[in-house]
Structure formats: structure tokens, C-alpha cells
Image (cartoon, rainbow, N blue to C red; front, top):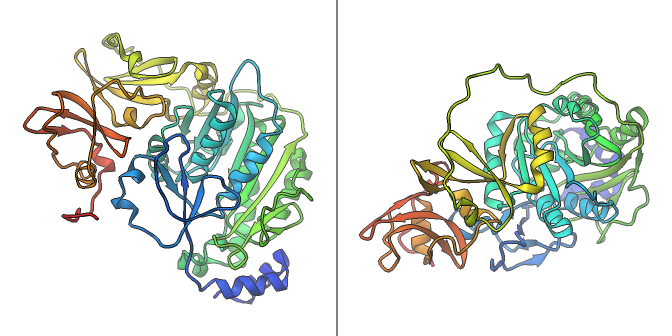
Length: 464
């Protein structure tokens, strides 16, 4: 375990008695939990419900998720149970937010990769708002944003927009967001059970570095939060410097009221109330470490003097696109705007059009809506993301439900034979959950599962 300075930091944050319990738990095995997708029902997971998450399940053991087709179809997300507490705070505050009448509710998940909190927010927003929201999930690290975009696609909610920008770029969207969730990079004390490197890299200097970086991140994005807008601030660490003291700094220097002071959000014994938020600590809860607080912005929105987002691109001759074939809207259950870039056709919910246009003026958008397919002349080759999307019309293509072995072979990108299926494009799935598409040729089929998402391990010859 780390040195005496960490022990002092932890005792300062949660008290010496609570810290003693935590120290005894740091060497115990980490728990395993998943969060079900309420809009892709039918996934049977045995376990105990996470107390603060209606769709969270604590598992008795860690299964091999790679060999579960339901995992690849976005029926659930593997997420630490303590991390789900941020979603609990979000839902608590969301119930108190007035819904805009002429535009979608705008929410930003600022440090979103790999996507656990993003998918939790998306499900909560859809349950509360229906189609009346836009969730921007941002990840500044280019190496991580692809994972985020993939996980968003698997989850399937078309109202999630993935961006990749530094927090300071959001200042150009003055007062744009009603809620910002900032799960900021931290010293990682809450990950000590799962990550031995986190223990080895911990130091007093690193805590100070993280504290300063967190303040910069919040100050940079602060102009994008509306007056009276809500910010949920969270870390996976315990010390006061990165947690309560930073919340005090935000309130004092940027202009906000701390919202969780004395708020009865703890839903079970073991969640520790701090000065301005809540701390979840191993030994007291089954999950890993998590801190969460919330603030309401009281300072006026500053109108920026000019565009501070990504620089405008130089004008290029417009590429002549082939016309989008008629009937593509019939593949979808919602009113959409079809967009084309080169041969790729995407569909964006019409309700997002105005808000998305503002985002695209200032930020680098990685994905929005749903990739529908690729044009080959006047033929549309369906994209795997279409089958995974919540707005996919299930009867748009013939459907074949695969047995476990064939489903894993498909996800491995092996050729599968669909003897009784019609020729042409066919949706394949498992237990009623769409996984993607094949082009059935009769004696064989072309597997359209994305190469980047294929199962790389060898598939056992028989899965029980």
C-alpha cells in the first residue's frame, strides 16, 4: 500500500474509522457489475440489484463477456457499481430541471470515454424525456474517442453526439448546455484494488497536479453552462483536494451554489457524506472508489468575443454526391434528416437538427445519429450501426435468430450459412436482439460485421 501521506489524506477525507475499514478492503477482490439497457430488453442476468441503479446488477462472479452475444448487441454495459452513483445523482437532479419547450434538453458528458456514464445518462434521459434531449459525449484523447464512439453505437441511442475537443473549445457554445457532467481525470485512489499502477503512481505532487488540472478543465468549460444550469462533478478518488475543496473553489471563483450539502441522497448505509458531496469507498460499498457532487451556476453567462472552437477549414470545391435513394427513411422508426459524406449515409433525428448545427460549428463531431449504410451505386449496403440503433425498423429486412455458436461465429466474422433465409440483406441476431447484417447468397453469406469490432479470440467449438 502507499505511504503514510495517502493514509493521512484518506483520514482527512472520510475520517479515521472509515479509513481503517477502507484499508482492510484494498487487498480484497474487486466486485463485478453490469447495467442493463432498458431499451434492449430480454437480457437475463442473475445477480443482486445495485441499490442506486434500477438497471444495475451485481454479479456473483465475472463471466467471459467476450463470449456473450448480448454484450456485443448493447443489451448491457459492464460498469463498476460505484460509478453508477453518478447516474443516480443525475436522475435525482434531472427530476427538478424544467424541460425546454422549443428545443431538446442539452447535456454534456465532458470526459466521457470509455462510455459507462454516457450510456447511463442516455438511458436516464430517454426514460425521462423521450426524444426530447441531446447528449454530447466528449473525449479529448484521440486514442480513446474511438472506443467511446463504438460503445455509443452498441448502446444504440441516436440522440447521443460524440465529439473530440479540449474543454476550452466549448466556451464558444456560450450558455448552451442545461447540464454538464464532468467526471474529471484524477489521481485514481478509488482504483487501487483494480489497478496496481494507480498505487505505484500515487504521490502528493500528483494529487496537486490533478487538482490544478481539474480546476482548469472546469474553468474552461464553465462558459458553456447556462445560467442556473447544473454541473455534476465527480472523480474516482478520495482526497479533499480533488473533491470537496475543488467544489468550494468552483462555487467561490466561478459562481455557483453547492447542491448536495445535507441532501439525503445516500440510499444505503456505507455511502459517506462529505462536506459537499458523497464518497463511495471499498469496504463500505461493494464497488470501487467514487466521489460525486453537484452545483448550480449562479454567475451570468459570458458572451464570448469570437469563435474559440476548432478553426474554420479552408474552403474546398464541393464534391458532387450521388443522390440518396428513396425509401431509406423507411428503414427507421423516427423522423430523421439524412446526411451524406462520400458514400456513407447517416440519419440524425430531426429534433436535433438546430442544436447539432450549433455544435458542428464549434466542435469536431466524430459521430451523430446513426450510420445507415454505404452507397454502392443506387444500392445501400446496411451498416452494422443501423441494426444496433434504437430507431431501426425491425421489419425492414428479413430477420434470422442465431443459435449461440452461430452468433459467436458471426461476431468472429466467420462465414455463416442461412439455409432457409431469403437471398439478399438479412438482419441476424441472438435471442431477439439484432447484432448486424449479412448478405445471404444462398450457399454462403457475406459477413458485414465491422472488422474493428470482431471477436479476436478463438471461439471454442462448443459453448454451453
